[in-house]
Image (cartoon, rainbow, N blue to C red; front, top):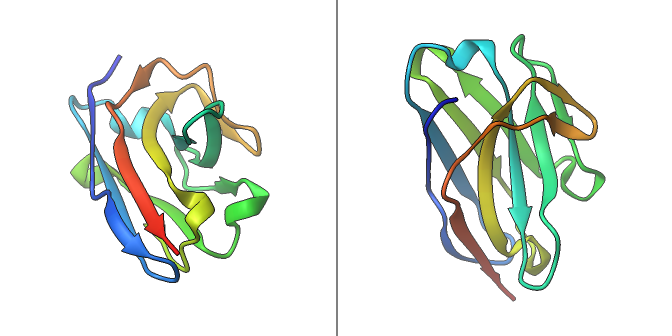
Length: 122
């Protein structure tokens, strides 16, 4: 397992931008597939984006063209650049490490961050 700490959430107006970061402990970050999930009040947690060890990326349809996932293995850091934010993007965002990344998100996630709140006002 790996310890994950998210940051960068906050309150933003619709159309605005935020960049989330997720810093991982240890020296094995580059060996994990990574992903971002979110959970809105009263809803189930859903995958937002995922990235393979090699840098291939996957997104849920509702965020394509607006959110970009990336990773910097030298800094043990995962990012989520969020542009053109909408009120429906409001949620707690979590990063996760797992075995594989695909269009379904990160499979078999074994480590989770504590979450960071993103609130988009209309």
